[in-house]
Image 1 (cartoon, rainbow, N blue to C red):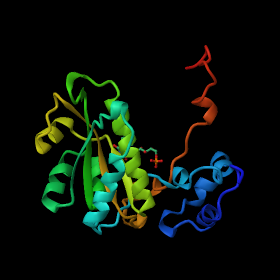
Image 2: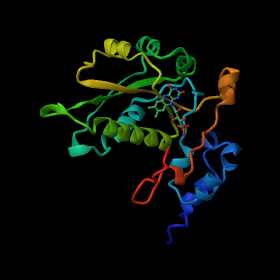
Image 3: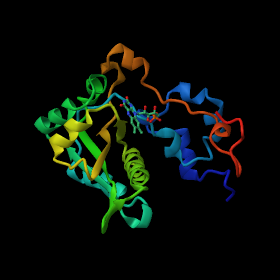
Length: 224
Ligand SMILES: Cc1cc2nc3c(=O)[nH]c(=O)nc-3n(C[C@H](O)[C@H](O)[C@H](O)COP(=O)(O)O)c2cc1C
């Protein structure tokens, strides 16, 4: 089978995406997305970061599966520098949400699960800095996000939070770990439940052209 020919299963998925995860028409109007749609692993274009969440909780097995996916991410020397703290418990969730900026809390509060991805900045068996820890933790988050998408769940990473508060609340030592991002997880919700300004933004976002980020061998001299 040529690389351009999607499998029967992929074709079916592309023709009939799961209703709640179906990209809005705006996404199809982008020519780049349209032209690449049939070539990419569908999740690359179908995953996005909504703000509309259903309040329905996640089963313990679903939660475990998400972290399992993160666990299998690649890392330098297999150091696995990612650490996750999470909660679905209402009181604990409110504490974590308290560390979030107001503009994020307004939509995140409805989601059932809030996690924080930390990165261990030193090697496990040697107290020297691991220069790849953040890169690897990002890979774990991406595995987590794609696994969530695969399970019909949605995720939204959040950098707008008070770092100091997060270390205090979780007891994580800021001398060893960096709080990289909060992660909001749940099932897709009704965009009409969002405040009007957020409802307007409730669609997948675009990307810069490939030519702006990929270069053969050397970056051009005039690169900004
Ligand atoms: C590390 C990180 C931090 C982010 N922080 C926020 C945030 O504080 N608030 C927010 O609404 N979205 C946040 N996002 C979501 C991005 O805005 C979003 O991923 C980006 O616009 C691309 O859109 P997409 O994920 O829907 O494809 C963050 C994403 C990442 C990866």
